Image (cartoon, rainbow, N blue to C red; front, side, top):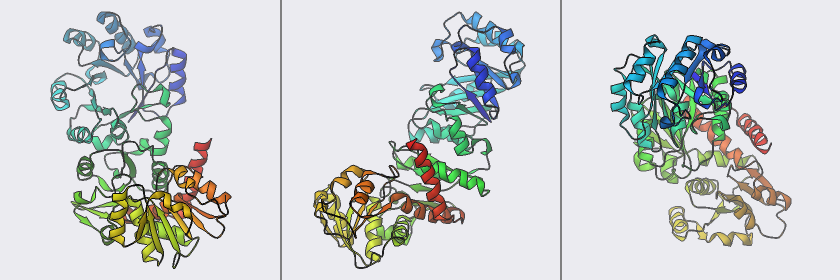
Length: 480
């Protein structure tokens, strides 16, 4: 169930939002944000009255209403008499105020809400369950992985909306059935959100939010807190729905990997992709590591097999398949920039294909460690500028830094592969192409490793070119 909300300042804007978004099951009306406060008659003239939740938030609960509590109750009662389906009253409102409002409402029309703000969610929920209401709306802090696990444990037949606020709040709002909620709040557009964690109308479409249920299975994306919205979410989710899979790909930007892994073990997950900076750190937390993952020393894929989490690596095969469409690395001299988990997979793949590899990285400790592991030469990052290579592969996120390392001479006959995904034409790709090099975009590797992940999770192998084309369309939208 989807409830759309907003920060409209007048009835005209509110009426427009309700009429424009019939896909929402419910619409929240925030009386406290409207100027002037509308009469019951004005509320009665709104469209879709039987799909409205009316609230009038006081200042002490993060709203804008500053009048007397008796006056607030009068406005809520007027809205109910006008035909609004539900009325939302705060758990922290005085008992006398709640009782006065409840006197005018059948229990099923009463929603009792609370933003926990540090109080124990389990204790609050237990206390709220005793109230004669049809539904409970509980918003809890969700800034850490352990907060998500706590939300996952909360259960009540009266829970209508259970949502997180804060940096990880969007996880609970997109995957709301996973967290035991019957509904979620969304916003018509990002700037109209009443909570930064609210998904937007565009995200509803991309994610297929209307179709998720308690039967939906989930694939996580374990990523860093600073990761931008994944393009994979916008590519995989529509594709999976088209192919009839009741599965969603869900970004999990959780810093503490132990909490991410605990969430994967809590049920309904098929597995996860693993991105920067977790590809090496996740290994000790898994039950088994496949042969490729062991040899590379990094994992980018987790598959749930019963109660066991198995780590695998599809970066190597994805990289080599993409590279093979452009050139044969056998016997080539390859310079690899970077020494993270992706670089490990690239070096391993190149060596297995018969290339001669030299590694370049800023951190002396990291490059020495990879040099020992794979038996390759290593040098400071700046050393790549001499250009004594046939193939340059950059795994560092700063594409402009990689571009600055290109030698000033012509690159005709050479190949440059930027595996990063920051844009369709990052600085390294542009510079190398202008100097005559053959270029390979990171989206090709992403597509080939991604289709291999999908095969392992779902026994589904989409064409890589289909994934590339859909990614290209999204890059185009981002360029405007």
